[in-house]
Image (tube, rainbow, N blue to C red):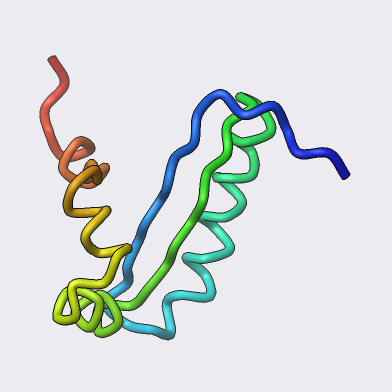
Length: 84
């Protein structure tokens, strides 16, 4: 199988406050990421971790945590801002 011709690469990170919510969230986020990837020829990597795991990554200054801190954009913050 040939890889798509990727123009952009995005990472999507989401965390849930309870690990039991991850199964539902993971299916939802991955389905959206797959649709966007196929419709726009864009690769989206998804990472879903629960809050405890995220705090562990933060405590150990994990590479994923550092990259999100450096380059991440909070979609939640954007969604809660009034439209201009």
